Each structure stands twice: as structure tokens, then as C-alpha cells.
Length: 473
Image 1 (spheres, rainbow, N blue to C red):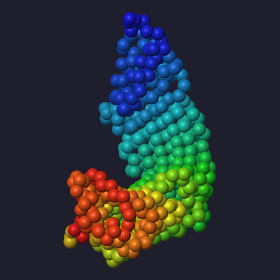
Image 2 (image 1 turned 30 degrees about the horizontal axis):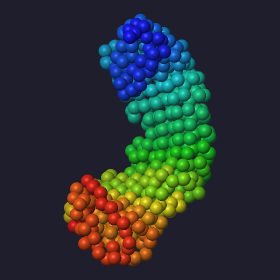
Image 3 (image 1 turned 90 degrees about the vertical axis):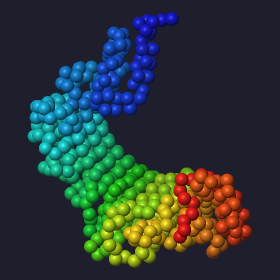
Image 4 (image 1 turned 180 degrees about the horizontal axis):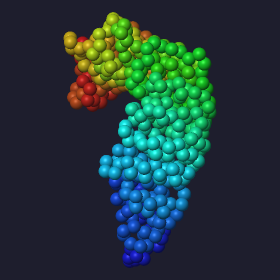
């Protein structure tokens, strides 16, 4: 048997590959420092292989909170590009000004070889030297993650508008950054609010290669619905998503874009209540703002539709489309809208989007993750919605369903299928979540709804579910 000293270079390289195979083991600055330094401490031959150009990527990731001598050691082992991480709060407060000046000097000198830059700027820790360093041209940069504290102002230029290879950018900043010169971007994630929405739309107009656009709200409130007069066409964008964004802003953005290649659409809205006491949501105008400009391309598989209703949240999912509305912000407000408005909005939410995308699902999954509403519960809770009427609206909208899977308050769902008899005319399979007592659950179901099973020839399957199957309402 050969000793470790006698192993050929190819096998030593396989050992290094296995050692570096789990990114979780070196996912932080400290872990990476410990994990990579160990490679050179086993023996000279393994160290020599690790220092070869084949394994240069081990040393190309540099955290600027490391000691200077360690950073310089890694820099000297790299002949190509760097992946650089900077958090202005890391590295301790001792000699903080000198440390940040060193970071600025490093970026100024090495920016022409930086391929990935991840920067997290905190309030009070953004000296002039670092501001100037981040305006250094970055001719090889391909990926950028840039977090700028909300309190930081008067900074809007990155890399002196010179990053011609930049393809992926994740930007979180309250101050508007000028990114219109980065025309090669294919994936953009961005936090937007009052100050940033205008500059973003200007930049999108000159990003024809953009494929993936993901926007996150800043928490700003936008009073009134405003529709754009013209749409910006993104011919290659196949994925668009909004998260934690108020309804009026989503409506404005959707009316501003034309996405002819769209394949995946995610809309996550936060509802809110204006001074009038009226619920503000994009749902009543969704068909208008989507219109001909936003249409998800037909999917080869769009057979399953998933719906979930919680007390203050509702989801609708199908391949290529995810719509979510969050009523939690309304818990503590007094509404002028009558309870019927909420029922109408929810029905619109669960039926119109799928009709807009011409979905004809053969399988429908419904999770009613709500309990009987209490008397003192806020009237924005979806537990107050008439589930019998809502289920009839849903079943009317999707007559193509063959298989129905129910969890939670299944009694209202089943009751809605008794009359009128023409709902879900092709239904042949019924799956019902029955808590933990599955053995006797089917008999209970048949006993509670004899008329349903006399009128329909259904194959029933019961399964375990953590949701309570019945409600007293």
C-alpha cells in the first residue's frame, strides 16, 4: 500500500476536490480562512498541488476583514481574477479608519481584476476614500452585490460607469444609483421605493439582454394608482418577480413593462389601508395592468393549480405563475369597506389570474389553513369569508379539474359540490386530508355528504394532514 507521500498528483487533486466539495464548510470569512489554510499544512506535495493554477479558485476569494498579511498571501497565489467581499462593520472598531482606508486602497489597485464584488456599507462607515474606490472602473467584473445603508446619501455612481462585462447585479440602496451604463446585465435584483423607481425604469430601457428581473419593496407607501403611458419592452426577460411591495407600486411597474418572452411571474403584494379606510390591492385591476404586455408563455405542463388560504394571506400557484396577497398590514386598522368587499377581492384573486393565463388545470389542490373566526377577530381576516360561496366561484372557474385534493376546512368545499351539480363535471378523484385518524375518515366523509357521493362516481383517497379537517362554521 502506498503512503500519502507516494500518491500521484492526480489523486492529490481528487482529495482537494473532495475537501472543497461542500461550500457550507467555508461559507463565511472565518470558515473560509480556516478551511483553506489547512490545505497547506498537511504536507509539501499536497500544498504544491493546491497552489497550482488548476486550484487557483481556492485562493481567489478574499475577505477584506482578514489580516493584511493573509490577504496579500492569497493575492500572490492568484494570476487571474478575484472575488472580493467587504463589510464595513466587520474587522472590529479598533483602527477602523485605517482598516477602511486599506480596503479602499485594495479596491483601487485591484479593481481591474475583480470579477465578483460583494459590498455591505453601514451608516457612519463609508469614508471618502472608499467612496472614491468604488468609482474605479471594473473592466472584468461580472457579478455585483451592493448593499448601501438607508442613511447613506450622495452616492450614485459605481465604477465610473465602466463595467462592460457586468451580468448579475443585486442592489439594495435607498439612494438612487445610476446603473444605465451597465447594459450587459442579464440578472437584476433591486430594492425600490420613491427615490429609485424612476432611475430604474430609465435603466431598464437600455438593458435589452435582461433575462431575470426581481424587485423588492422598500416599505414606501404609494398613494393612488398611476398607470404608465408607455411600456418598456424587455425582449429577453423570461422571469419577473416582486416581493414585499405595496399594490399601487406593483400596478405601476406592471403597466410600465412589456415582457414578450415571460415564462415565470411572481407577484407578492402587501395590501394597505388609506385614510379613507378602503383596502388598497392590485387585484381588481390585475387584468388591466397585466394586459397584452405581460403574458406568461404557455407551459408544457400547467396541469396543477395550488391554492392556499390563511387568516391574513392567500396564495395561488401554477407552473410559471405565483400570486400572493398579504393582509397582515391591515390587522390593526379600521376599515370602511364592508365584509363582502373582502370576499369579492379574494374570489377575484383566485380566479381571474389563472383565466388570464388560460389555465385549464386537471388537478386542483386547495389548503384552507384557517379556523373558525372568533368574535373579536379583525374583519380583515380571511376566516370571515364565506367559504361555501368562494369554493363555488373557484370550481366554476376551473371546470377542467379531474382530481381534487383538499386539506383543512373541507366541509365547505365538499358542500359546494352538492348543488349546483354542474360544478367540476369531470371530477373523478377526490383526495382529502384527514388529520391523524385516517382509518375511519372516509366513512365519516361519506356519512356527512351522502348526497354528494350518490350523485357522483368518485374515487376517494384519505391522507394524513396536520390541518384540522372540519370547522364548526
